Image (cartoon, rainbow, N blue to C red; front, side, top):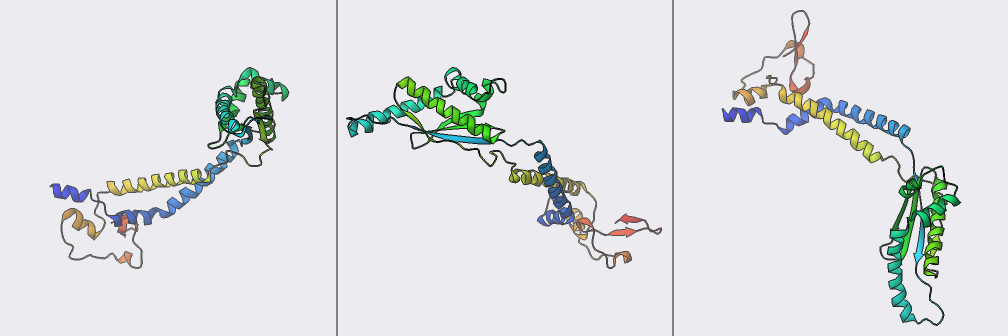
Length: 258
């Protein structure tokens, strides 16, 4: 009994291949249709965003008479602490963000909390450099805002330390490419998952089909050897149907699976 049950649940690679051969055209149609519909839908609802970035150099310039050793130790150490201060205070509402909103005439258009979400500060891994970035739906506005933020940040920290510690290396220009393009790979991945689901439906139909359709099924399920097969005259010149069985016909011409 256990041996019969193990045979009933056995799935061969040729069975999986037979299912694939039967439904491959459906899988292709699903991949093409889902990819087209998903890409068109995303193109309609998707809103491009543009990110502009400014780099700021963080280092104190040596005064006349300062020795090289002093500059190589104290100033570098001071720059490291200054970078931490910029990361912590670079989004100050009163000292950084609000003056920029006033200078760029952003009051009434966006809230200061929204500007804070649009704005990001990061540091370089192996250099005394800060990267200021602003992301918005307008490429030119992103560049204008981040340039104003960079200027205000340098002015604020330089005034606090009463030294020229921060300086803008490169001002941002309006980006030409969106920072959030539609991912074609993700679209194809979703389409492929849909195709796998369609294949899974055919696979479950194959698993739930308990009929004996081929001579191999006789040996597989009944453990009997097939001595011969009586052909159907209507099968001459016809190809096999899905999973290997033929269709037979009744006396009145109605097609019936056999």
